Image 1 (cartoon, rainbow, N blue to C red):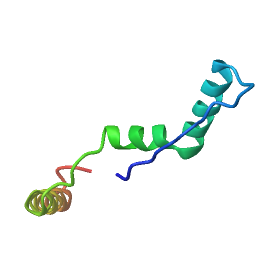
Image 2: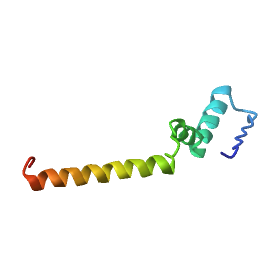
Image 3: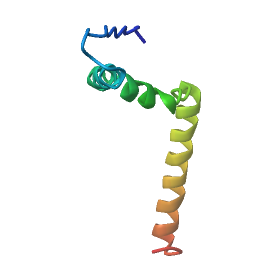
Image 4: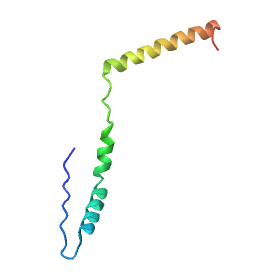
Length: 75
């Protein structure tokens, strides 16, 4: 993730609450919080071997179910 720098300078006639309000608005506009929240529960991709095994298992199960349907043991 790239670094985003947000810099706010206090204007001469501005109080601290105004500076804080401007800073928080800039942070919301830059979507920093949203990007961090999106990556919070990021899961790794499954390995190719694991995906392949799951697919083969599912296909085998489908063949068994079709066989049982043809025999009339399940509806």
